Length: 449
Figure 1 (spheres, rainbow, N blue to C red):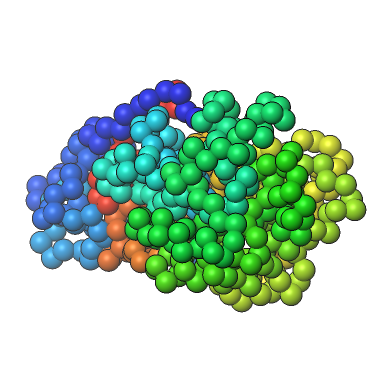
Figure 2: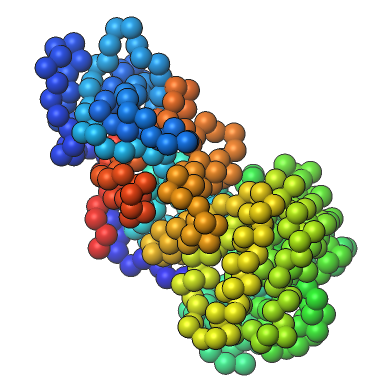
């Protein structure tokens, strides 16, 4: 997961070229975008607005950061959008950034530049989240939901990754000796992960989880069919997760705290155990991270139809992380077979009306963030409108289920993207963003370095 190396700043003032001056003396257009004044009304005219089923030409009014009905007294400011297309902002339901002050401004701008206003960080430093508390969830920044410390087994994933980063400044140990050292280290436990190996340890884990008020918890399941063998193998650090016996009690404890539980799964068996435990979201689809699996093991990653039907009927959100899977894929015959199984899983879930959402599972990789939703829509056989609904409606509402977002109508937050071209004609138009407005505040984001 690459970290962004250039720090940039967001300026919220400026005069985009799309503005025109109106002759109406009572509601003049301005060459400066409206401010977030809670009493003034801004009128946005001459645009095509996304309705959920298509685009309709018209006008919208904004006051105090929300869309409102047309005021009887007219608007204080008029902005012409010059016939452009307007969609709600996008969401990313599985990220690992931002997680600290490190490169925060650059990371924030990567998301804003891509039109992503809503981010769900499924695993991060709890200390780092506190560092940036004042820098997020404001009209001039991204909105972030944190999971903080994922729960795994001692020596499992992501303990090995985080301990290796701390000890060796690399996510993956260079040799067997480093792997063993990282797998035995607990230096970062409590900040970037927690370990749970047996039920007697659960009360202590719950006490540590109660230190935070975050709304979600992530638990790790990796190859649970072979977990006992992997946990006993000193060379298999980072390749396993929680034991089946602790799953349901952990989920019940999280629910008692008011947290929803997202499960990292890698095989169909993992997904079955996660569903049996009562989880609230799947952070992956089986097969996403498999590299060059032999044909004899591919069935481990195929979702059985009854399980896919169960997932669909449950209504839980499912992040496929297909952008990451495609980006990491090597063009070998074995990898192509794995990808075929992975994409068959997606289509099977789609057939059973699963609630598929987009998530990059990356540390601010701009290409993967943009590619994930496009690749998922292609596999699902969807059209441009399906892609917009996936990115701009379904995913943001999964991240922030109690907020009025994902629609451009009175009563909803006045957050939207102004596109230079019709996204129904070219997918690239979804990233041809001329203006970004968040809760009535206009953002100017610097170009990519």
